[in-house]
Length: 261
Image (cartoon, rainbow, N blue to C red; front, side, top):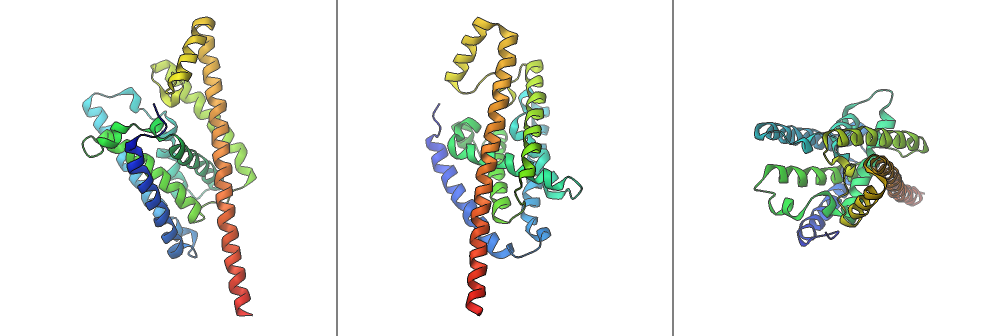
C-alpha cells in the first residue's frame, strides 16, 4: 500500500490548498477580533463533527453494529476534544486546547505524509455513494481544517506546560484503546494488528517466537511510545508554525508603527 494513491492526489491536494486559502481569508477578517469571535468557525466545525459521528453511529446500529465503529481510534478523540476546546471555558481550558492542538497537528501531518493509512482510495471513490465513506473522508478533512484554524486564528498559545498533559493524555488513551482492542479483538489505533504490511509481518514473526501475550504487551508498548513521539513531533511543528505567524504579525505591526513616525 503506497503512501498516496491517485485518488488522494486528486482530492486531498486541492482540498488542502482550499483550506489554506480559506484560513488566510478568515485571518484577514477575524484576526483582530476577540477570541470569542475567532472561535466561531471552530465551534461550527466541531458541531458538524459531532453531527456526522451521530449519523455514523446511528447507521451502524441500524445495519447491525460494527465494533470497529466504537470510539477507541485515535481520531475518535476529536469527537470529544474538539467540542471541549470549542465550548469549555473552565480551569483546564488551556491544557485542553494544548492537547487538542497537538492531536489535530498529528492528523494534519500524517495526512500529508501517509493519507492512505487514514482512509483508502475506495473511501474517496465511494464518497457520494456510501455514508461511512463520506464520514471517513469528511471527518478527517474537517480535522485538518480545524488544525489550520487553530494556527491561523491564534486559538491557542503554545506553551511548555502543554507537554506533560499531552504525554499523559496520549499514554492513557493508548492504554484504554489497547485494552479494548485486545478484549474485543478489534484493531483500534493499530493496537491489535498493524496496518503497515511489513511491520505486521514482523509482529507476527515475533509472536511466533515469543508467544502471544508477551508480543501483545511489547507491541502495545512500542505503538504507545511511537504515538507519544509522533504527537510531540507534530506539536513541535505546530509551535513552529505559530511562531512564524507571530513573527510575521509582529514585523507587520513594527512596519506600521515606523510608517507613522
